[in-house]
Image 1 (cartoon, rainbow, N blue to C red):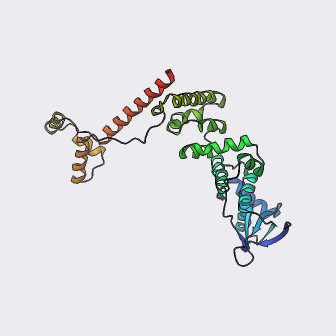
Image 2: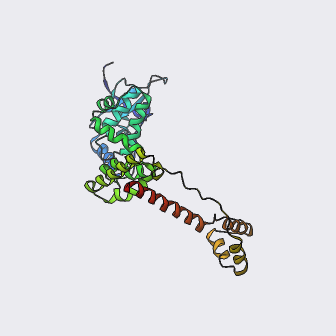
Image 3: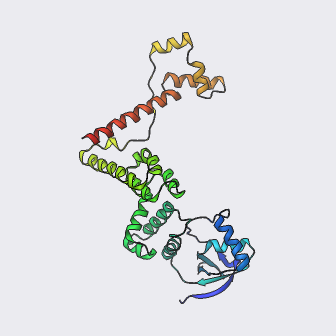
Length: 295
C-alpha cells in the first residue's frame, strides 16, 4: 500500500501502543512547540498507521506524538498525516530511529525498547536491528549493555548524571560492584574512568577462572540473629545504659513496641547491631576483592 497524505481529525487518532516516553507537557521544548503550532501551524506531517482491528476509521500514531499532543492542547482539530501500513516490529524501529538523535533521548530507556524488539523476534540479530534503526552495530551493542545496569543507575544515566561513555563501562562491571563505582562514574572524565572500570572487569574475569566468585557476587545483606551473652543482659538490667536509646532508635510508641525492641536488642537485630553486621560483611567483601587483585 502506497503512503497517503491527508488531514485527519484529532478524534480518529490514537496514541501509540508502544512508545519510548511520555510527552512532558512542562518541558521548554513542548511549550515552544505549542507556540509554533499556534503561530505557524504544522510544518511536518505526523506518521500514522490504520488500526484495522478497530471498527471505524481509527489511526495509531507511529511518529509525532509530541506534535499531536501539542496540536490537541492548542485546540487544532485537524492534523496532517502520512498514512502507512506498518508492522508492530517496524513501529518500534521507526520510533527508535526518529528519536535516537533527540535531545530528550533516554539511553537506558532505548536499551529496553531495543531489547523488547529483539525478544519479540528471536531471529532478529544485533546487526539486523542496527540496519532497521539505521545505527551502527557497535552503537546498538553499547546501548543494549545499559540494560545490565542496576535500575537506580539506569535512572541516573537517563537523567544525564553519568556520561554515556562511563555508563557503557560501568555496565560491564558485575552488578554487585556497580554501586562501588557509580560515584566515580559520575565525577571522573571518561579517559580516567575507562581504565579503572577495565581493571575491575579484568579482575572479575580472573576471579571467574580461579573460582573466587564470592569476591564479586554476594546475596542481598540479611542480618543474622545471635543472642547476647547472659552477662551483657544482666548488666543492662542493673545499669539500664541502652534501654532508652534502643527504644528511641527503634521508634517505639507503645509499651509493646518497647518489648519487641528489647527482644531485637537481645538478638542483635536492633538497628545499631544490624548496621555493625552490614559493615563487617562489607569489610570482609572488600578484603576478598583485594585478595583477588593481589593474586
